[in-house]
Image: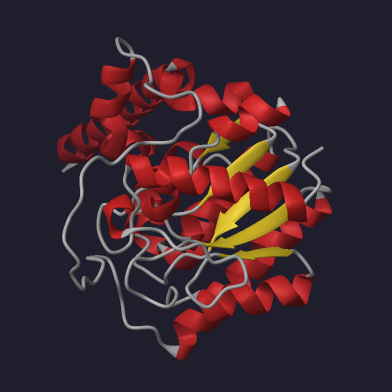
Length: 292
């Protein structure tokens, strides 16, 4: 019995040492890789959203014309939890001039846990995951190296590769015929999820304002829908907090008619569409918001 207990204690100790060793090593590799270039670059305008922003907004036009550092920090499978968590990590390191926030549909936040894991040392990030992904919160406390599981290959690859873009924008090429689709991560919008989303939007805006950072909320154009499912939540928040609201939906005051060939699919702009829309977006933003 005593030997068994001793072996168990030794096993736990070895596991603890290995976990911490891997954690500190991966953390150091992550921090020095191009995956964190934008954190070191400290952009003055940060774009936050999901794949519609990630593939649809190229900030290089603003950088070129306004001489401002910009970064598209939208995540392909992002959501409100990811955006709020990344905002907390950013504000703990520097204070941008502006956050541009996309109206994201209510969706599963599984991607948020993995994407925010490297920032788990930030208290606000830990609190977010405890509220929305408690199983991940427990796992990242128990095994620190688990925070890098989902990004292990990307971290290792990033040691020998460089990023294709300094502005975070990623291009989609091609065109897919009109088709009604439902995002694979979508969930039924209930009263509870709407309350949670509304609270997160409020938190995002209030956190920015507390640091003197301006917020602009943007509804992206869609090929065959009037607007996104979370449209009313974000519009209400923009009016409530008196932040700028750019509405490119089919019924919005900023609407711009884009040809079908400029869309990759029903919800995403292709590279040509992103170039056209980014120019139009920049002109509208410059008219409605002082970029200095």
